[in-house]
Image (cartoon, rainbow, N blue to C red):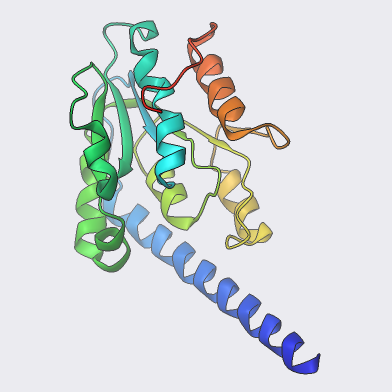
Amino acid sequence: MIFKKNNIDQLLLFIYLKNAIALALFYLVKKITNGRKIMKTQNILFINTGQIGDIVLSTLVLVNEDLFEQEKEVYLLVKKKYSDLFTYYNGRVKIIYWDHTLYRFSFLYRIKFIKELKKLNLEYAINLTTARGPLNDEITLLSGASKKLCLANDQKHLRRIFTKYYDKYYNKVFDLRGKTEFERQSSVLESILNRKIDRKTKYY
């Protein structure tokens, strides 16, 4: 029992250490990529760095693409390894592929990626990832968007003290715990569009 408790304590300490390092990197990337915004913000970026089931649910954005104002560019950011899912998609939403491994281990890639996001002229950056972590929070918060939104975090690997810290940088945190993942993403999309949406996904 004592051995098991020691293992748990070590694991918690390791998680806190990882979270602290991630926060330090967040500040460093923020400082390096900081720049003055020139153009008026108007475009929308949806971010889901979850697994394939989560990505399929986020295709609600694709199904409802015609509900967005025509002058707005709409983007969906997903992990690069799921790019095959969108092979035959040719709608108006632009898919951004994110290399999780490179972003995690290459500081140069991380800086370049954030700088490219800042060029998108974003009004909204919406983090649809329920299992939030330091990386998808960093992408959302440093995207250059005027308004940053996210779902309440249910990921045990981002400790509460760090979750609260990231939360204060968001303009709105949707607390939809108790609802299904499909209901959460649908509610966020309807809040952004301020209208009822077609509640079906692009892929099954």
